[in-house]
Image (spheres, one colour):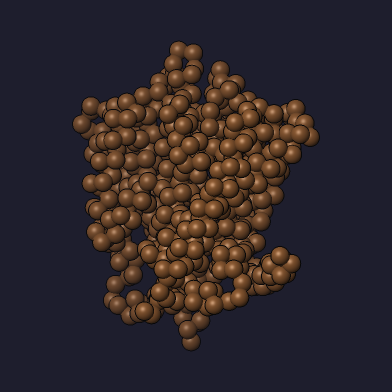
Length: 249
Length: 262
């Protein structure tokens, strides 16, 4: 992974949606009477969106893209001969990439913080809590993306499914605004999904706008989803593999 | 000229028959288009849904929706016409297939720019046009405004094409260019909002450094008649200058191309 340093930085910068939203909301708050919207001033928007950007960088998963390729090109076959589930290979490469990513990531966050006037929380417990939620969120996202990638056993369009799920993740995760800004009915739907807890909640923790109790509740919800997607992934894998064998034979 | 038009017809026919073979893809592509427009609308309605907010950077909801429409339309133009072709340039350089393209008795830039189409994303174009139509129906639009918007959107498409071609042409040296175009799509995401919605220094960058403002904001302003003469003139000029520059860059890249094997 360290071989692709330039690429890693470019990929990081290309996930700019939260940065774009940050600029728009900061301008909005600056123009609003009283200098704030729903209790958020321009620097507070900067803090929130920089935090979502940071967390979303830790949650990046590209496994469905790789599975799609492997299944279509047949390069999955030699991996099946090995005694371990090929999933762990993907887990390892994702984790390794995170280690390469972290240094330039923190440097960029530092620069953006300086430019935008953001200020992160001083409570020390918020940092391990946010990191824990991000780790859980990454695991959840990895599993559902893996299941979507495996759809390539049946359909050519697994890439578009992945795109749709990304959009839902970005929207309900709170990449456009803190979740409290959303229409009432969207919020009611969102609390049943894992997305607000993997992206918005850790960001709120870093911004000093969420409590430890909320973090605990979020972790529980994520654990439930983790179990669900673990089973889903396993079923799709087993059934799909039978289908794959049928193609090769 | 007629020869090139005939070629376009043949190219379109060939890609259509190749793509319609996979019918299941269509469902996925429609889902992706709907998801995309849903998210675009959610983003803008959250922005306007806050108590006390009636305008963003001096733009009313309808006017901002116009910009969203142009954004969706441009996303469609990119994924139907531009991206499928440009992503193949790097592949052709890597595998040596570029040799055959260069040997053909037609202009190579024309060939690599028109050979492929992604018809599956065609709904994006319709959604974009629909949004523009809906937003414009609640605004005062003059025939002159429509004409100006058409011309300026034409130069917007040229600008997008040139940026993509310029970035993809670097494949002759760097082989892998997917990342660079990805970076552009990230910046292009800013085009979903009117430029006036950004802080002043960013507005400057989005207009003069990365000409994103000319792609969606300027045609929308032209449609509502809110466009000053300066920007109206600047857009076609920038398009023309970019076209000449990328044309030169393409020629230069081809001239220094030494095929995959040597």
